[in-house]
Image 1 (cartoon, rainbow, N blue to C red):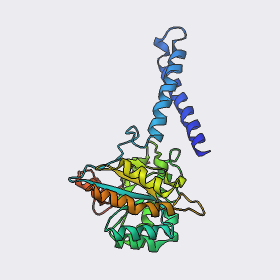
Image 2 (cartoon, rainbow, N blue to C red):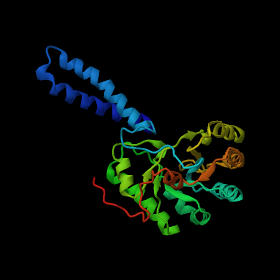
Image 3 (cartoon, rainbow, N blue to C red):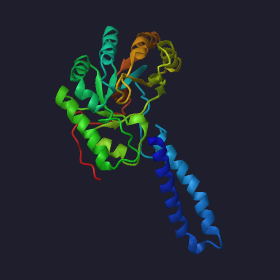
Image 4 (cartoon, rainbow, N blue to C red):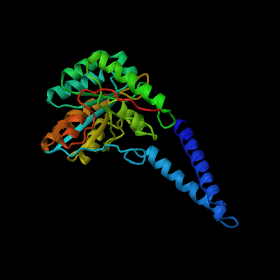
Length: 283
């Protein structure tokens, strides 16, 4: 029902804005011209708002990074919605065996329940990104709420590991006009993805592996999951099973496996400062 509510609010807001535009032109429009203006503007504004909110790569609400441009062939594997045990540790085992690095976009609530997974990930050279505290959708959230969920999660990660997240991914990739600005204010670069394979639907390890490897290319940011939102019993076993084949195929193609920040830094696209200091961000 969340998406229905978001669509309803966006449609209503678009209608109001279209009405304002029509009323402002009423003095120069004849007859039913203002009504035609409203009926024309409303669907256009509604379509723009929907694309801006739900299309993960749309620049309308702000610049979003969905791929890198490394100096030599590389990709970034990312894992969302964890840490969830035993799956996060099993993923770390696979990555260690291949000497590969990845980025984990963690949920604050999950991280609070599994701090050891965070410390191990950092010790193994991986990156921890911010995925909000509880995976609540952000399109209808105020700047204060957005800032609160990002800051609370970053504070926890820093308290546990000594490292503050430099990258942020919105739940579902959905945004509003304030998400990117607030994320930057909290020292995080907003990140989308290049390749998503719907692994949380659990289509089978072979299907997950094939969906990723068929689309692998230089600079790709791959979205996988080591959890599933705040589900009571998430199962990422198929991702664990598919991961060795994904890494082997990437290596066979000469693709290095980097963290997101490493991938972006090679292309000069990492905007967060090394100190990860929070900058003031207005409401």
